[in-house]
Amino acid sequence: MLLFVLVLPQQAHAIPPPDVIANIGSSFAQIFSLAVVFLSIGSSFIFSHLKKGRAFAKQRPVIALVAAIGVISVALCIAYAVTEIRRVQEQEEYDREVAEKLREEIEKHDMEEEVGVLKSDFFIKNQYLPLTVTNEEFAATEGAFVLDAREDEEYEYGFYSGSTHIRFADILDGQWSTLPTDQVVYVMCWSGIRGSEVASYLREKGIVAQALEEGASGWVEDGGAWEGEVLFLSVYTGEQYTKLFSTSETRALQNDSVVLVDTRRQEGDAQVIPGSIFVSAFYTPTPELESLLDQVPPDSRFITICDDFVSCFDAKIVGVKLEKRGNTFLGRYASPWEF
Image (cartoon, rainbow, N blue to C red; front, top):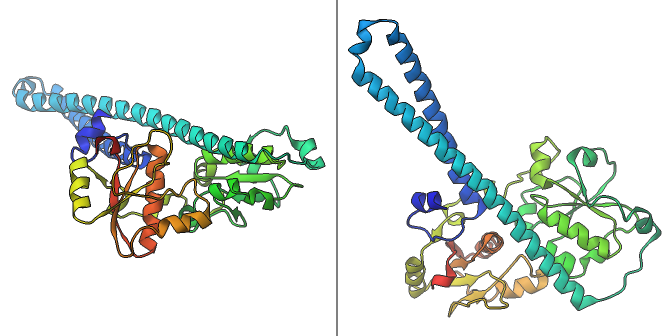
């Protein structure tokens, strides 16, 4: 976190979304590689001079310089290792948050529905299949029914050929009933987190579902068939998709007629920023989502508000949706508790 603050001192000091962390890790990887090259050159230089006897004593300034390079290289290696450990910890935290929020949403819908589901013979026979499958197991299936539970903006630029796309929110809104009950439904998301939760939910509805445990990302990395892009940010590369505004910048922009769009779920003790408009994509069924998007005035400049990994991803999705409507997305504000 300290490294994140040092690298991005002008941005909000919130927990950085995974794409920001990945960018920092990539930068340190490049520095690390460069340091290793310098250290190798320096070591070769020292050894070559050691063979020259008295000439070695005359090269003390050069030796000191090479030693300094060595110290810097070791320091960079340590910094890189710390950054990588932090990145893994942040990714694990992100996965836990995503899983917990999905479980909460599923439990909420279950409490609202409380409808008994008639289980088919196929379900009774296969209900104890593992909840997830490996890439190897999935590759061995033939004629599989694949459900893509990602957002529209993720799916439209890349997908598994022949898959059926239904947003997570739409599945919870009742579209699960359109899925087959006489065969296994393989659920695919980006990392495997959403897929596992969706598969668990579908089993409660009498559908034999299994999630691809590493998601689309792991599938493509393993050489699996795929059409288009798998990473959201590989398509949306503009500065606005990674820009995080500070509290003072956000206040100034709001005073300059920039619209604030809050993507956090409006429940519990959530603090609503005066004048902001609520639009959350992740948990809103498509018909309702369109009416939420209609609240944002046409041709607006806007900032999306978030406060954790899940809502900050949601904030990007909402940003893209509003851009498609002709609005101008400036970036995100991730420290609403300071406002």
